Amino acid sequence: MITATAFPRAALIGNPSDGYFGKTIAFVFTNFKAEVTIEPSAQLEIIPGERDKLVYENVPAFVKSIRLDGYYGGIRLIKATIRKFHDYCELHKKKIHRNNFTIRYTTDIPGRLGLAGSSAIITAAMKALMQFYKVRITNPVLANLVLAVEKEELHIGAGLQDRVTQAFGCPVFMNFDRKFMEAKGHGEYLPFDKKILPQLYIAYRENLSEGSEVTHNNLAERYARKEAAVVEAVAQWQHLTEQVWEKLQRGDKNIGMLLNRNFDIRRTVCEISKGNIELVEAGRTTGASAKFTGSGGAIIGTFENQQMLENLKAVLKKKNATLIIPQIP
Image 1 (cartoon, rainbow, N blue to C red):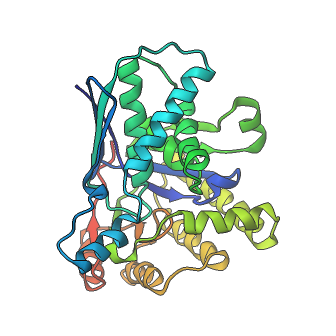
Image 2: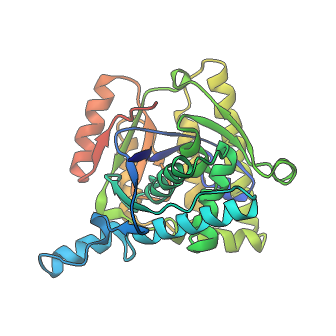
């Protein structure tokens, strides 16, 4: 039996400019995980996961499941991954054996909260398939392949940031400069040691779940039209990332105001729900910084000391939010 794992992603700064030739810094954390297992079998079989169940206790339980996991579950992610992996091997003339397998996935990553739970399942599945077929794919290419599963097979709007971070499995500075990407086929990715990061918290509220495609599809259309406000926002997110990266390289962990600015710019170009705004503002009332980890439903920020952390826990609990300290590999 082969087992592969991928973890949720937290975007520290620069998101969502990764989809628009910008720059970002992000990391994965091991508090949750997606796991895919493959074992040889007589036929190719895909085993449904918890998010694919079709039997519910009652209508409220059904509605809650849809709110948390969407209408499609994880089976479509596995199917699309297998197809894209097969197509990649054919295109690049990588010979693979014809043995069949049974594949299944499990995940405890809170869904549709901007933590890259879907791409974690796809990344874990890709890594499992690579092991099963003994195919080597470099991390930058793996990230491209995972993104292609979502954009080309499933038509989900997304950027490279999540997939890069999950492919590398550590904190990464990412430069998606257009000329670099056109020349290399991928961005400039610089993995770095978590020790240079400040104290960070993540908080999420499950009833704020919303698919990232809601944000990305709208922004992509507006960016393609060269809408001035969106183009300017992308430039500002890129500059913020450069500032944070320079500070961290110097050993300066005082980046909270820059994180706040990242979200404030987002508010000028994206429609954000009242609940999400309240979550961010609640975190900031304690003196901590707060911004989205992704597209909404979860926030990330810096805090200065244990007292501020306790205040954060108390304030966010009143908003029915769960606070965790990310365990960064």
